[in-house]
Amino acid sequence: MPVHVVARSRRTRPMAAVVAAAALALLLSALLAPTVKGANGLELTTPYPAIAVQPGSTATFALTLAATNAMTVDLGLSGVPDGWTAGLHGGGLEVSSVYVPADATATVQLDLAVPADAADGSQQITVTATAADASASLPLSVDVARAAGGTVELTTDFPTLRGASDANFNFTLQLHNSTPQQVTFSLQAAGPSGWTVTAQPSGEAQAASFTVEAGASRSVDVKAVPPTGVDAGSFPIGVQAIGSAGRTAEAQLTVEISGRVAMSITTADGRLNASATAGAAGDLSVVVRNDGTSPLTGVSLSANAPSGWEVTFDPATLDGVAANDAGTVIAHIKPSGDAIAGDYVVTISAKNDQATKSADIRVTVETSPLWGVMGLALILAAVGGLYWVFQRYGRR
Figure (cartoon, rainbow, N blue to C red):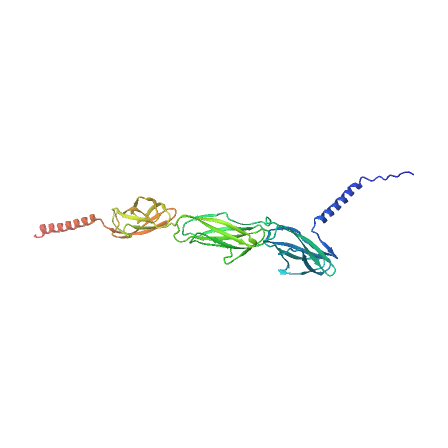
C-alpha cells in the first residue's frame, strides 16, 4: 500500500507561534494575578495582595468586588493572628457586607493593626465574599519586618540662626513621612534655661497634634525667644516630632547670640546745652555710651548745625567702645561771625553699621566783647566830641 505523506506549509508556522505566545501570556497572567476564587459572576481582587509592614503599624488592603448581577455580599476574614486587630471599612464605617450593583464594582478597605511586639515573619490571611448564589475568596500575605515601612525625618535648610539678644529666632522645618501609613504627630521643643521655645505645624497655631499622609511632608514652625539680658554665645534648641507606632523624628538647632546693640549720647556733665561766642570756636565734651551687650566698633560722629557754623570732632571716629563703657569726643563748635545773640540747636549724631543715635544740643550764642569795646569807644568819642564843641563854641 502506498504511503501518503502530507507536507505542512511553512506559512502555517507563524500562526502557530502566535497562538503559542498567546497561550503562554494567558498562563503567566493567571499565575501572576492575585488569587481569586469566584462563582456565578462574583470576583474579589486587590492590586497588592502581598505587603511588608513594621511591628506596631497598620497594613491596609484596597479590596474591589465585581459582579455581573446585583447582589449583597457578606464579607469574612480567616487566619488573622492572635493579637492582631482586623477591620473592614467602607464609607468611613466598619462594615460586614456590601452591595454590588450589576456589572459594576464596590470597594472595601481592610485594615490590619499589627501589634508592636509582633515577631518578624509572613502571615497569611484570607478574605471571603459570600452572596446568595455566589462566592469568592482572596488570600493575602503580610510580611512583618522591623526594617520595612520607611522612616520619618525632621529637616531644615537653616539649622543655625544668628542675631542680637533682643531678637526672636524663627526656624522652618520639614517633617517627612516616608512610611506607607498616615502618621499622627505631636511636637515638643526645648531650649536652655530661661528660653521660650515653641513648635507647631505651619498655619495651625492651636493644634495639639496633626497628621502627615503616607509619603507626604508637613512644615513645622519653631520660635525661640531668648531671656532678657542673655550673654553672647551659642545656644542649642531641640525639637521632637513624636508619632504613632513609636515613630519619632528629631532635629537639633542652634541660636548664636551676637549681643544686644544699644547706644546713647550725652555730655560730660549730662547737660545738653553749651555756650559759644559768635565767630569763635568753643569746646564741648560729647560722651558716647555703649548700653548693649556687644562691643560698638567704628562709631563716627557728625553734626547738623545752622548755616555758616563749623563743627568738627576730635577724634572723628571711635574705633571701639566695650559693653557698659563709654568713649569721649571733643566737639569744636564755632558759630558764624555774624550770628546774633540767642539760642541755637546743634544736632550731634553717632553712627556705625549696627546703630544710630543723636542728641540735640542747645547752644547759647553771645556777641564778641570786641563789639562792646567798640560800642563804648564810640560812645566816649561822641561824648568827647560834644564836650569839645561846647567848649569851643558855647561862649560865643
